[in-house]
Length: 148
Ligand code: FES
Image (cartoon, rainbow, N blue to C red; front, side, top):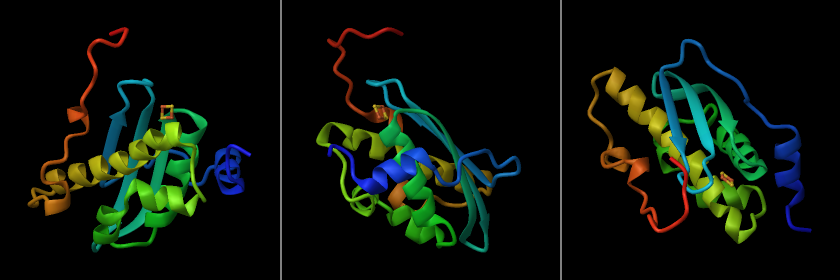
């Protein structure tokens, strides 16, 4: 079986899909190679992630990892969300095929991008974990045949 039961469950019944209209932080990231896009919305009160939702134009693994990632940060502190790695998400899903690991990176980066947005909106100093965050800085092999 290529995908674990947990991956299939979160793909078929994704948690926390949607938009938060009055979100405190919104982050959007994309993967330049597959072209998939992920958008994450956070509601934050007293440093706690009280609500989180996502929308994606992404593959099944992107859906499953985002679903799991939102479950892992909901009700947690900002600090815990900052520390959530794509590795922890993949482990919580009982693994992903190697060539699908980048999809889990999209989920982690979307959360970080939403947190950057939250700190900037509130004119707060960015915590060290996201101070240099730049999801567009990924090395792209320009020799690949790509469309603009
Ligand atoms: Fe692009 Fe999965 S193939 S996020």
